[in-house]
Length: 327
Image 1 (tube, rainbow, N blue to C red):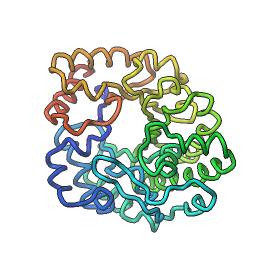
Image 2 (cartoon, rainbow, N blue to C red):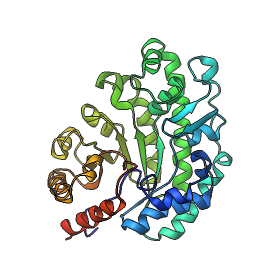
Image 3 (cartoon, helix red, strand yellow):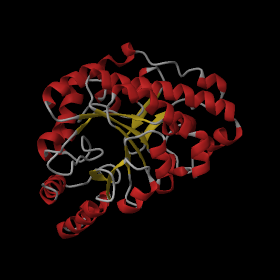
Image 4 (tube, one colour):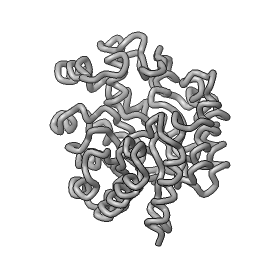
């Protein structure tokens, strides 16, 4: 590629006025199951910003909804589960996901691959720990106390839960790849709540299994979590080709924590985009410079685009990265 590639987590979403128009009267989870809407929303930032990749518009709880879990995404709150899963009977409700559950995904990815041409489509899924957290807590959580209590106190139950969620996650990613996605990202949004020893014992085996099962497809695999500076080596060890880095650790330091041959993705603080352009440009230059320490760098934010972000700032940032890194 003639420049450092750039895309943004949550680029297809809340900050775009055209997105808000399309989604005006449509609940979030419904919008994720309407292929024409998914295609339109996924394409909006590609048209507006000319980013180097599209990210499939969906939500990490879509596969859980597809197998019949009673949940909804409440505006201003996030995913809320009607009947949290905290015992063996609850875990049995997590059946395997079948291709027929995800026909809308196959259709939307097919449409997108046709529209995108040579531009890659990144598929994505939520990682088992983050899905487990929503299911156990019943919604977003600051302390993950019920999740950790199950993980620490009932390891056999935890293993069964994580195995089932791993299979569901794998099925969701496989469906996207087989329909034409050219890369995938596994989001472990809340795994930064764990220390390294707990991650290694209770999360790493399941994420590793997912990445190993995807190896046969020979598509790049990205792994990302928030607040994971102390876990970066383990995130890479799980089998990712690219490790996403949030804004809390400089990229050159992050490069020292992952295995040789691992590329990095990141890591501008999303809140920087509310500062004057000179600040954004200076901080972006610094990230691009530090990114040279890695075995490959994809420019991105350190987390998703914030809803009040000015789309013109993202467009300017994309152009700036392309110009600064042009070969």
